[in-house]
Image 1 (tube, rainbow, N blue to C red):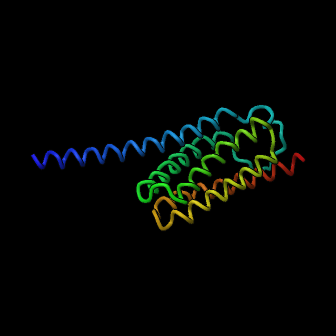
Image 2 (cartoon, helix red, strand yellow):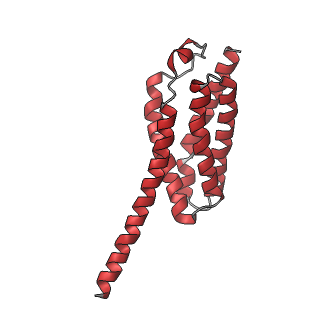
Image 3 (cartoon, rainbow, N blue to C red):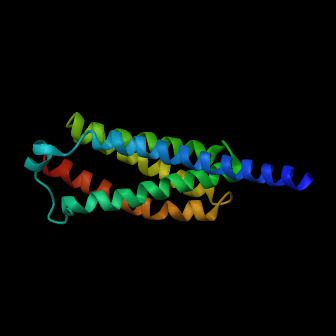
Length: 164
């Protein structure tokens, strides 16, 4: 009888773990869905862009992988530490991530998008620094995200300059 209670307790713990992962996946998917609600469209196509602008088809696969990493990294920190500074940076980056598409493609405000992406970059870097002691894997999962957002910020800046 004691064994059955222990086993049930393990099952409940595993279930809570997977439910919390699901919550992080849902939050990240929600932000991705919001971002997709503001596609580049004709306005962006008409803008002058640098020759090193990647093809449009590349953004979907890259962001899909990054959003998966974002969700898992946040979940790993949550499991290890709960709500703390690292998770606050995680929430901040998620917010700035969702706002960028709104500023850039929804409002057509390249300068507001530039400010947002700078704040996004700082939130990502903040997450990496504060999560390193909590979960190195979580911190490392944000490195490709930081690299991509660094590239996106350079592209945002180039588009701003070319169209000012």
